[in-house]
Image 1 (cartoon, rainbow, N blue to C red):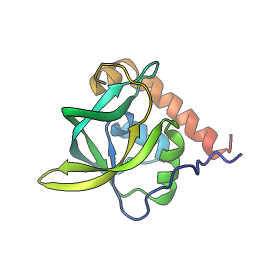
Image 2 (image 1 turned 180 degrees about the vertical axis):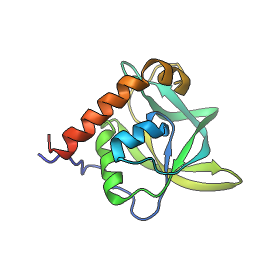
Image 3 (image 1 turned 90 degrees about the horizontal axis):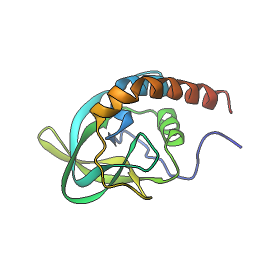
Length: 150
């Protein structure tokens, strides 16, 4: 079986990706993509980065009155979209959402969570302090295995 996921249709063209969890760390992007694409600060309204059961990364879910900070990840190539899509769990759904970046309102794709969450808010600072180093090593191994067809 091919390591490249084909279950989700992927954006074509210059569509940005709104990232709110581990993909907002340039170091993670370098391990997965071999480079860190441009990250533009952005936020989404009515969504929260929820803590997921037994996972160290978040899932974006609807939540009234909440603002989630993140970044727009632009300039992804088709191969980079395929890598990121293969990296994301099956419980994520790739969908367009309204995003606020600088002084403009636009749309971007994001990976929204479709399964159970916990009441807590995910913290990028806690993730960086407690898990980033190990996550980078696991991400590098994951990419190597993907590219070797494992």
